[in-house]
Image (cartoon, rainbow, N blue to C red):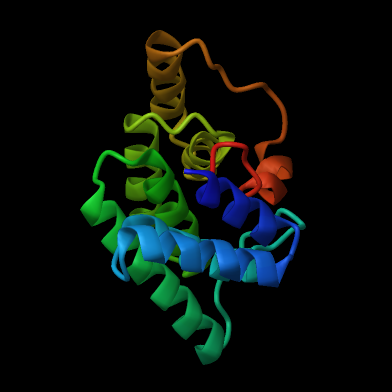
Length: 172
């Protein structure tokens, strides 16, 4: 749907009026409780709080916590409506990560990869997480499984440098 791409691009470029118009058009097509409307609303919230310097972001105030929790809830609803939708699971992982819930973030990122999300974010996050925990064997096995399943392989280097691109993927 054209409106999805327009809404996502408008959010990324901070064009609030166009983003609002596109979200309203999506709601007219799929209804108030549709998955794309929920996803785009949550996406707009996540963009506001995403740390751009690569440091792990965690909600620090109750107002931020409430907004991120609402976004996470919208993404939970969207992924429940479309359980095979890798994008919804990726954004759920980002929301859980921003809320400081790494176990839930990991589950969401694993589902994103399982359901075909080819963006770097879920793979980078899972790799970083296993590396921080010093689970080297699991990390190697995970990368080997990805190499077997797809042609896509992570590049070597500092994966934390890629966190600033976590939402600006072309897969939205």
